Length: 170
Image (tube, rainbow, N blue to C red; front, side, top):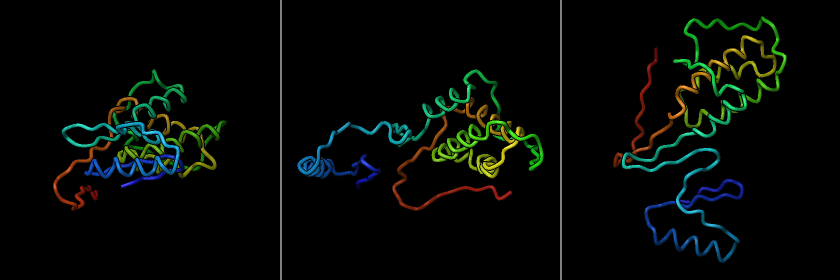
């Protein structure tokens, strides 16, 4: 299997000889550099263990916290306050570009952090006219991230191709 993103390729499969052969053919046609075992791709870290393949964005989160000047912030146990009351009213946030930038980065983070999907979808609704209260929600999400940096997605081989999932409809 070959995954192509602009000028980056990931070549993977369960036949080492076929992978080596494909790389050789590509190298004859193009100037390529083999970086070895995949560790990072598009800001996503891939770690292989006996449990499976683990995807996380620890470095991305640390960079985001640094950019938001929140490396030393207090931790939050949840990304949203359970008593959250959102309104469009309120004092406009004086740096809407900062808000938009941070929310955009949070959206990218949901690739490996589905636990953020709901809270990030809420803050993304206010991209065009954020208030100071909306920015406080973004900061709450960042405080939650600070305490959950090591989380990600574990992909395991269960010997079948059935999709298994869980949802709490409540």
